[in-house]
Length: 163
Image 1 (cartoon, helix red, strand yellow):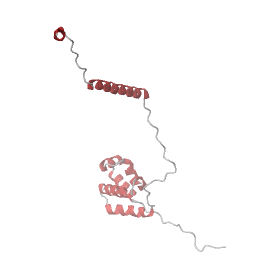
Image 2: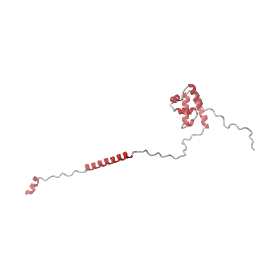
Image 3: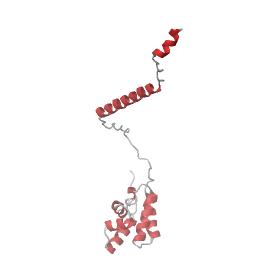
Image 4: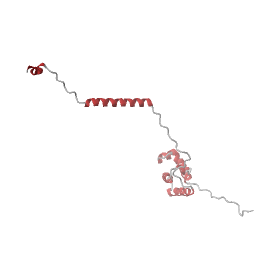
């Protein structure tokens, strides 16, 4: 049997607070509401909440998280490089993000929209009738006019009969 020589120590040191706690503390010291900060930075309030909670997975990519942290720290007049170094320390421990989410289901086909068939059929019939009428009218107009028939008059017929 193996006896441990030392008691088991915690395998991980206590995680240092991330930049979110510092941002939240400074915002609260200034008496700013989340909505006011979001309006000033032109971002959604949910992103401010995510930054303060160190929930960087709420951003599409790490570059966006860094950009928003930089903007938020500058707005609160905190040293930007210190805030970003806190983010980098936490980001080193996190797994690399995947850009394409894994899906275990096949894509579903969207149904075609319900189209009213009666108005479409009526429009098709009217279109065909109009096209047929135009074709018939243009075919008749293209025909050469019939030669004019000159009626025989007695003056024209008389000289031939007199001789």
